[in-house]
Image (cartoon, rainbow, N blue to C red):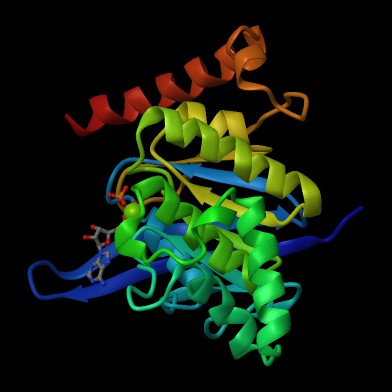
Length: 260
Ligand SMILES: Nc1ncnc2c1ncn2[C@@H]1O[C@H](COP(=O)(O)OP(=O)(O)OP(=O)(O)O)[C@@H](O)[C@H]1O
Ligand SMILES: [Mg+2]
């Protein structure tokens, strides 16, 4: 059996805040994720989803517990874990190509090799005709594609994605979901994907973790047993897909009623 690539063991986070004193942002989280799995996390606003991804990324330190990646304790950011966060803006002074080349150059590739790598990725995210554009000249969906390509350029084994498609219109969002699945299907990166959309989570994932309200802990895990490659038009008609969406929505509604 494949060993777990990511082991989150008893992780919690307490922030010292000016407004609320010590605030428990994340309850006690223990999750194991196998290599190549696509995992989504759903939960009410403020339950600690972003905090959990930041801890995995090594940007925030856990208050208790630890995260192991391939048996190694996470103590800071590393090239094995690539963040795709909404607020991680592109470099505005660099072109699309410049943004995507940045990682490979940092890793010591020659200019020629970095350019070739970046161009390959721009084809993958359908932006090959935009390499000379600056971020401000791009639409939201294009920027998100550049951000994805920039992260992929490092060659991370794990993608940490925090509502990467949240700000996009429904059409672009669907397209990017398909592109992400295509990319994932090629080299099966391990993905941790935070979203507020139940349908997005079910469509993309092997497993969906539903968190409780703040301080979040795992309420329920759904194993999404749907065939791949997944075709949206087929899934929408698939009773099993509908059942997953309904079951997860029900569970999340229960939590909202508890808060009210
Ligand atoms: N740097 C920080 N300092 C203090 N408190 C913080 C900090 N970051 C987050 N929090 C608090 O921790 C809790 C969890 O925040 P987090 O951003 O992880 O939630 P979330 O589940 O990602 O929410 P959303 O769905 O709205 O993005 C919130 O109550 C938030 O106010
Ligand atoms: Mg968040």
